[in-house]
Amino acid sequence: MAFVSLLAVAAVCSCDKDKDKDNNNNSKSGFIQNNAIEINLENGGRYSEKVDTVKLTIYSEELHRSVALVSVPYGNGKFTLKLPTSVDAKYLKDFHFEYADEARKGLTISDSKVQESNVSLLAYKAGSEVGALRYGVEDWDKAENWDRDVYLTYVDRDVSITGSYTGIDSGKEVKGAKYSYSYSVNMKKGWNLRYEEGKVKAENLYEITITTQIPAEAKWYLYLRN
Image (tube, rainbow, N blue to C red):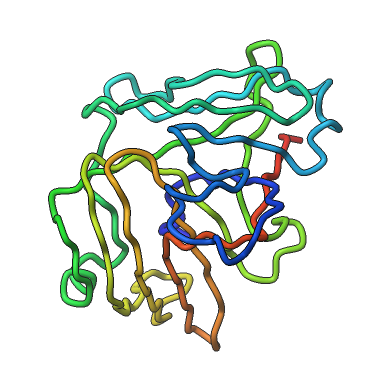
C-alpha cells in the first residue's frame, strides 16, 4: 500500500497503560525521551551473530541513495538510539496524503507548510545491510491486519492533523476500492512517533487510522533478509 511511507520502529514496553499519552512525553521504553529511544528487540539476542550495527537512515534525492544519520552497535538487541537534534531541510518533503484532493477537503491541518522526513532503521553486518527493524503491535508473519505499525518521523514545525476523508482507487488491481482515512495527529517540531492501523472492513472497503496515541503493546521486531 502506497500510504505506508515510513518504516516502522518497534519496542518492548512494560508500562502502565494509563500513561499511554502523547508519545513525546511518554516514559515507556521504546518512546522518545530526551531526544532518544531505548530499543529492546523482541528476541534480540537471537540475532547477535548476524547483526553488528543498526543505522537510522534517510533517503537523499541529491545522492539517489540513503545516508546514515545515526549508527549504533547492535549488541544483544538492546540499545539506545540518540536522535539528531535536527534534520537538514534537503531531506524533508511536504507531508504526504493519499488522495490529496479529498484530504484537503476533509482534514484540518494547523500548519500546511509542515515538512517531514522518511526514515528507516536498518540492520548491518560487516558493512552490508542484512535487515530492518520495525515497531509494531503484532509480528508481520502473524498479522491479521495489513498495517499495525508505529512510524518514526521528523517534522520541521508543530502540527496537528484531524478529520477524515475517503478516496476511491482508480488503479487496475483494486479499481473502485474505497480507502477511508481518519487522522488524530499532534506532533511537535522534532522527532515523533505515529501509529497507523489498516483494516479490511468489507469487500473493497478499507479503513486506515492514523494517530499519535501509541499502543502499549507495541514491540520492536527485526526482519532479516533471506
